[in-house]
Length: 274
Image (tube, rainbow, N blue to C red; front, top):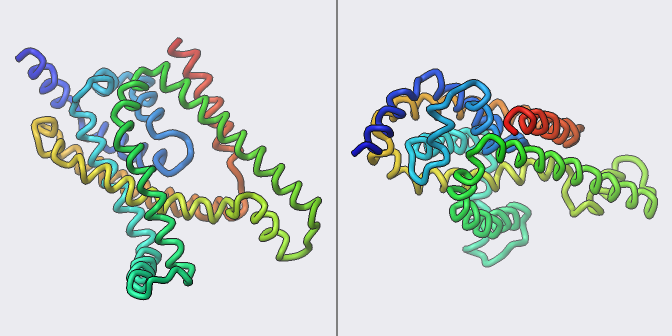
């Protein structure tokens, strides 16, 4: 009984302002490669929102139901942004099944997304809850964010080495240089990799939200459904603007700023919460 009263009290203190801010944060960090999990823990801790920090490490809490709404909002934004692509891919899936063929690029892409979604979805659904509770402490989240920065910078260094090696081997000229080098770097440049990751993220994020919607409409969602709707709307707007920005960014730019950001913010937060 006491535990239920504590949960109810915490839920009643999830304000609309907090919900909207967290929604914007989720919509941005879910798509930017800067760890949405880390920011969802660190941001409330830095601003003294202890009603959110304390419940994230619990086995079951209203915060998990709240995150469901944010995930759905982010997925809806991705569907809207890539609506024409998804329509085209749906046609590719239909013709692929009908003709038993993967000759067209859209047919190959939709099957690649389907095949990649299965392991990503299984791992995500199996470990998201455990990861969220495991890294719900600010210090753990700061360390996780710092590691994410190291990974991003390491990936960029490896990509540049691959491009340099491809240039020395073939020395292509003109418009074909980018294609030859990219082929060398696993077949995808930043722009292609970003678009594929956004398409892949859409069913994964949506599934994570839809499968946990019963939590939102159960006791965990009592007293916060309005806040969830406001947060989901904010996440959708932020996610749409984020993907619009990132699609343009990755046409010419790299992962360096994101990696440096994660290292700096993560390092400062380690000092703050150590």
